[in-house]
Length: 363
Image (tube, rainbow, N blue to C red; front, side, top):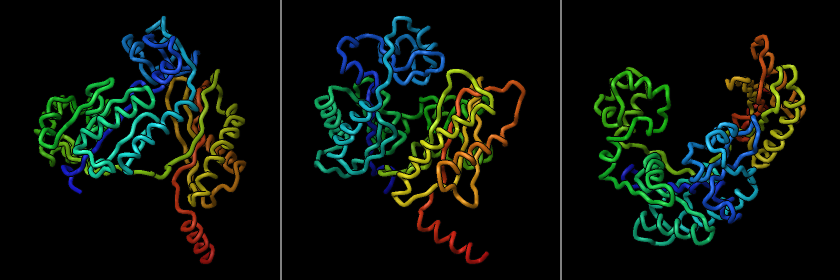
């Protein structure tokens, strides 16, 4: 399907966790609400729009949020409730299309090129979805409508909160031209700095460079940048995406040394193994063990291993994850504030077993 013939909606719930809290507790309405546990180790899960006026943002350390907004009301997160509302919202999506790609509890892509309802346009469909969410959940959602996913995601942020913005096919290049390059997917601080060094600040300025020049400077990613600058993106909405990794992690109240992590690694390995078993029941198994560490100064380290024989129990997973600590360079006085254990590189179980049998037969 060509880029211009798709009709994509990106729906993003407004300040989702905080809005659920304000909906369920009328005393919180109109007040700066921060969804987070208090404490030096906590981070902000969500902030109401009243709190955002003070600069409070998601993923910010809770202590910083408290400094920015001393009058903020801190509410501990209740993910059971948030997941229940998320399921309710996805049920609304399903009335309009089967092509739904959830990104998180509070946002999703919908392909409404062909809908179940026969509404005359993607814009009408987005309006109907937003109205249903408001009526049935007493919450608001913003939406962007565009010919592809990345444009729809940019558009959904255009008229927040409780807004709708539409980018029609003939408007794509003019819509993108004045935007800063960091609005393009994949352009983070490092790439933005490289482009700034070339005198490129906007998408329009990026578009002026030839694809060959960008590819010469940045490899295949350079050609991809050129395509994005013209609004070209053929990635389809992908419902029912397969799990890429299962993991569990924990942040400590006090920083720990590498040697002190073992009981925590073993506890997290049990959780990760339980999640893996659910995937195994679906016919998929993981081949790679991942150990994640975050230092006291917030540097993240990962070490991984793909053994010839996959772990057969939570104990074996824990043994392998603990052994991965040997691949971490021991620096004097190093301390760690977080540890995680993951399993990745999922493959089809039947195919993996058949391949294992083949190699055993050749041994």
